Length: 224
Ligand SMILES: C[S@@+](CC[C@H](N)C(=O)[O-])C[C@H]1O[C@@H](n2cnc3c(N)ncnc32)[C@H](O)[C@@H]1O
Image (cartoon, rainbow, N blue to C red; front, side, top):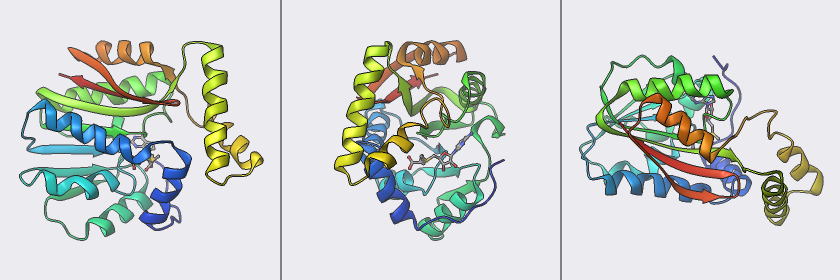
């Protein structure tokens, strides 16, 4: 379990994420758009690795009949999420990592996991996604966005240079941008698109499709 730490306000945290990860808000909007076009009316939606609750906060009104469970292993994040949703009766909270969640099998309609599973090594991520598969109802949908590894060294070099350019344009110094990029394969552990699709299929999902790609970040949905 990751321990509580001192966090900035949700707005400040989100603003920092927006300048660090290209198209950050778009990932949320497009993930929600996938769920809408999937054509189910979710009763229970689990947002794991919810962070500051940005996704649920920005989209809850579009799903008036849905109950949202927000989970995150970091207590400080759950505190921010609770504060931000200020007593909304359709939200509940759990302080756990995805692999530790213990909701019943086939109990959830939608699971979103946006940029929160890259801290796992490959085995850990598999365990977390197997747990998502277990908790989803048959016909339920898992939507994730992850830092993803390009298939070639050349692809890595080009994407890294583009991300660095974006960070510098957003106001980071060269050194800060380099520090940020040094986290690749040290603080987070990306796998290729192909490997991630295979992993989701190995979990048991029958349909797996990428739906958005930007720099190192790729979104996938997977249907049970
Ligand atoms: C970059 S933030 C993304 C937050 C949110 N999903 C969003 O898109 O705004 C990553 C979050 O993942 C959480 N996290 C870290 N390890 C996790 C795990 N094993 N399972 C679920 N969430 C995790 C962190 O505590 C953090 O809140």
